[in-house]
Length: 459
Ligand code: HEM
Image 1: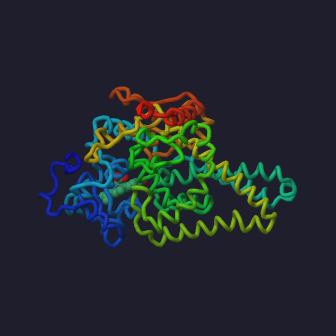
Image 2: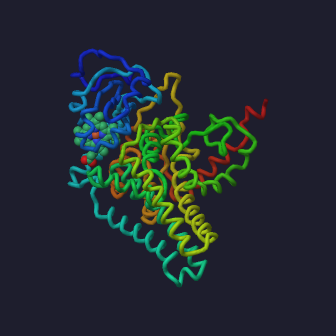
Image 3: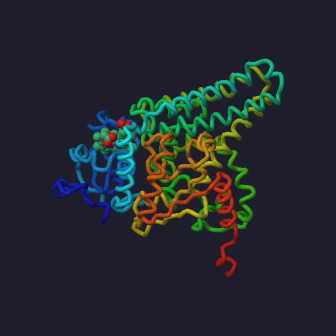
């Protein structure tokens, strides 16, 4: 099997222990942490505290196959010598889809981007623009909150308060698209404490868990993009409120879903906050992505964030304005941030043009992981500085998926390298000229999948 191939020619002697994924899954605590990479199993308990990328991410990946995150976040081959020291056996099956060996395309594109940073003597994670944008976002957030409840002239005029709530909702979405997102992908500075603090802004200001987001986004969506049954962003139940994959059973309520489904996207923030507790403490799983026991930092941030959120969004406003007004302002801000975040997310992947890969009956995806990232993603509006700044550079989604560890402020410069390499290897790069074109393709996707499939009509 391809995923059992050793890391290199000097691979350790024949394996002494064979692990099933269920056995591997039991070793998921700081005192007993195993990890699988390319079919080999490693006991990393003693390495966790030494990891230059911080202990947090290893605690999240303990007990799992971490092949794709390992290969994404390091220079290919660089940490292999370190890893070898902890080898203890092989993994004989897998719970989630696996991918072939790193392809020529993947090696080439990674090498070219690394060379770009070396040649130009640039640090992929340090740019002054990052901090300017963070300051601007926090400034807008604090100003819109303060004006809403503490400036008498505004407090006396409901319409002005609503405008401030709209501004606050938009700033909160920007915290998600910048501070949180950069922290999740370790793409700002080389300091794990900075990533953790940025991630915690989501807990404290949005009231939603960064820990849940890391499982959902970093270890789920980014690895298994659009893959049926594995990408938590496109997991569906039967029946569901929307039909986004041809593998879903069709029901008549999906007809004309393009008109009502986008309206429901406003409930995102509400839904996420409720499901956090279920995911971490009850289900202990985010769809197919298992959740490990939270440590003291995770627990403090999780509950501290929830308490602070209720305090600043509900209790403080209640002291100043009537309850109905608090409710209206809360809902307005929530709707704005929810719509903004969902519209931008949907335009990148939940569209008709891109691929929706299926694993074979052995759980194997017959396409290199990096190639799959390109063909499951749609970019848009590369020439627009305006859209780049308000969607947190998600218009450069392909580069973001291939190089999430690079600061979003470099995407514009490395996209030509990626596009040229895709062309050279005959890999299709999906692109729309404007955000509206990209979003329309999401609506069109909903329209097409909402229609009754032909075989159903023939029955
Ligand atoms: C258990 C196996 C692992 C080993 C032996 C290992 C080893 C290393 C080493 C040697 C470095 C420093 C050099 C370099 O950047 O390549 C590093 C950095 C890093 N590792 Fe790992 N790593 C492991 C797992 C992971 C996993 C699963 C992730 C998931 C995302 C990860 C994320 C990172 C990050 C983000 C850095 C960069 C820190 C910076 O920005 O300077 N590592 N790792």
